[in-house]
Image 1: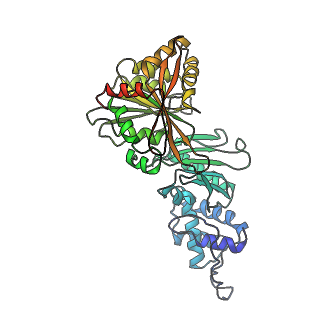
Image 2 (image 1 turned 90 degrees about the vertical axis):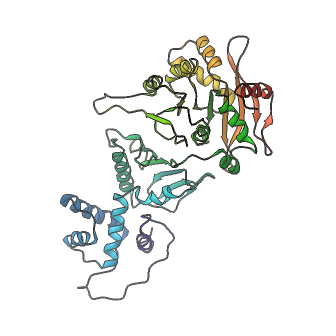
Image 3 (image 1 turned 30 degrees about the vertical axis):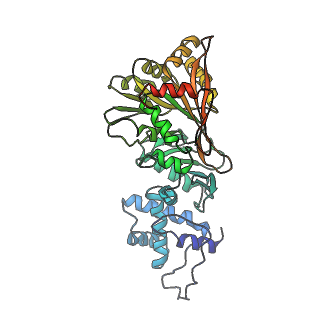
Length: 429
């Protein structure tokens, strides 16, 4: 970035708090005697040292970065700047002290789902159509590191050289992951997953193309029949989004208990209890796992038990719960619906559950799989297929295709008659 580009970028630091490239250079200031305050901004190479010196002075005084205090700190450094330059420094400091700094406008945009920082001049954003480069820049690697550490501290987590990564939920619900060098080669990396304040309705998902026309009627029948199911797909395919929407269809008289590693599900339902895992403290004590929470949830009289993501030994308690009258659902990472039995077998085996017992439990506990995919070209997410879980003659569970996404509605597959029968048991046709 040239000095002119830097001046234009800093001049654009307003209430939004972001540095955006491509702004026009402000008019050149009129000539002033050297004894008068200068409206010129410091060169880019001097920015980091200037902000750091002002930041340290204000920290020693315990003072807020008001224009008057910033001007006094600048004078102590032998700099005499005009009002415009002082205000630019104030904005730059506040962007590092408040919210997510220069990333805040991106996180506030209603269409944004993910913000990824690979370096000071490499910020990416997903607005629902795939990743694209954002016009946001940080002054240097140190600025990215400070933002990551501040966000981690706001979540009560530690991020430093001794613990160079963190996975946390910020106070506003945003999911944050950060890695520091040398684990992250070159620059600190920050990943932010935005959690929306409300769940989408199935009608909205239909209009967005996630569900085919009429898809909300079939999924409503699945919920009405109290069928236990898993929502599967890859990272960013919309599993949590669909699950939160489906939970909004649960009857208002039912008690829903959510168990999550990081609280992301926000279903529109009047009776929801949310449980969240906790990492160990610095002494290695106090850790609370998903398996612990599933056990506790079973003592809380749930009508529906929901596990945000099945990823480990908690699968044994979850299957046992589904087999003892607790209906429920959850999400699972899988490349295809047909891979779900193998994924569950791997998780159950790691938890010490014998293969035959695992397949028997799955056959009795789970009815179907809702599999989501994300189109690589358009970036759009959609419910690609619905498959039933059926136990074969050898005792192993396999999947049977029941419906697949079509532009005019679900296309019926081999297991459609069986799916209709299961839904009819709940009074839905």
